[in-house]
Image 1 (cartoon, helix red, strand yellow):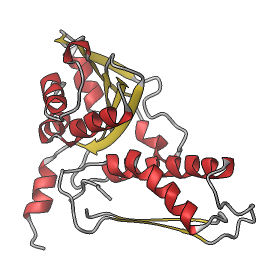
Image 2 (cartoon, helix red, strand yellow; image 1 turned 60 degrees about the vertical axis):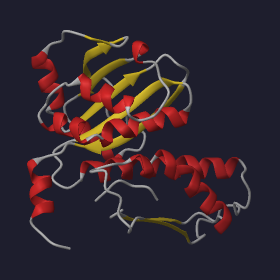
Image 3 (cartoon, rainbow, N blue to C red; image 1 turned 135 degrees about the horizontal axis):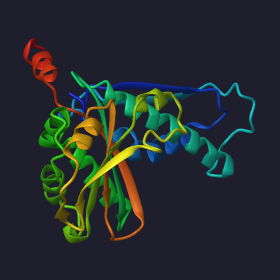
Image 4 (cartoon, rainbow, N blue to C red; image 1 turned 120 degrees about the horizontal axis):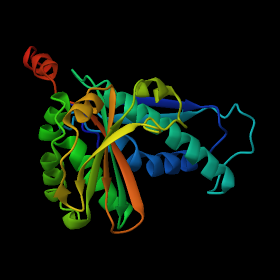
Length: 242
């Protein structure tokens, strides 16, 4: 049960930064919507979601008590760490065999981009297609359509990207998992394309796959993270009573 909306997920972050409780909470609230809350393993939100951050103040820095440049730097560091953790949670989903990232670019605003990205990685049909290494563009466009977000399907392009060993970079907050990745374009300006099925199967079989959705409605972008839906997920959740 992981469909984070800050469901069974306990996360604890510690820092030695000297920062007031008010500014620590403000930083966490700013970071969560674009990181932890953009994770979905199975669409089931639990009652147990908890994210706690604690600071002991031992770093010796000038105490952060307002939203100044030092606070902005702290937020950037916290966001980088939180994105790494979000990817790890998704990749380690019940029965998962691969991480699936959806990056939406060119949206009219960030909320639209975020809603579209999370709807795509939250779709069980998309998840099943990822498990089957099926470059099924219809399932992606369908999920975008029922998201309720405003976008123009006739200006939408969809690509799948991946490269060997992408998951090795999970521990590097600055790493782009898909820099230099192979790609296959399956939709251009709303029209499905003929594509190399063998290449698509190869790309979708790797340990980390990106679904890149390019819109032409603006400059906003967002990411969301999920995983494939496997036989093991059903076995794990069908073999026990809670």
